[in-house]
Amino acid sequence: MTDSFGVDIGGDTRVVLRFERFPSLAHDRLLAALKNIEQRLEAAVLASLPADKSGNLRSMVGGRVYDRGNRIAAVVGVRVKDAASPAQAARKALTLEFGNRGNAITMKAHRMRLDHAWANAITPKMVDVGSYSRTPTIAAMNFLRGPAAAIRPEAIAEMQAAVAAAQKDVAAS
Image 1 (cartoon, rainbow, N blue to C red):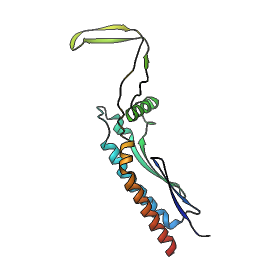
Image 2: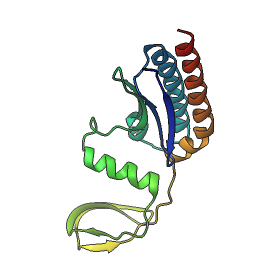
Image 3: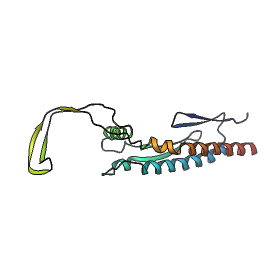
Image 4: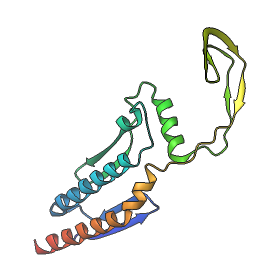
């Protein structure tokens, strides 16, 4: 049985290589290409992050290459599982990436410490705040999708070159 290769490019974020049988000679070339792409994409994402005073978002962004023998994948994204509140961290990252499209937020009634009135400092006191709704306007920052779109042509060319070199390696063996 001969090895056959195929490259499928789906949507904006998915490149799939298909093999009848994953040739061991191709593995190293493809892994090296994916590692290079992942490193460049992670650097581009980190460079395009919005200002983050606390550094929390920057600390959650990362990339990884998964090598499962017959499957290799590179992923760059926001890892929230180590955050103090993963669900909240995921919502924040999602809102920064895609923006807010007019979804209203309802705030429950609560008590808070008030230590200023507009720009003037006052003696701190506790106040009751009634429930209210507001619609924040947050522009999409595309800190993940923007860099991915920017390096996409280079990444595709690099993967195609790795597949072509792998085909030559397999044919020569």
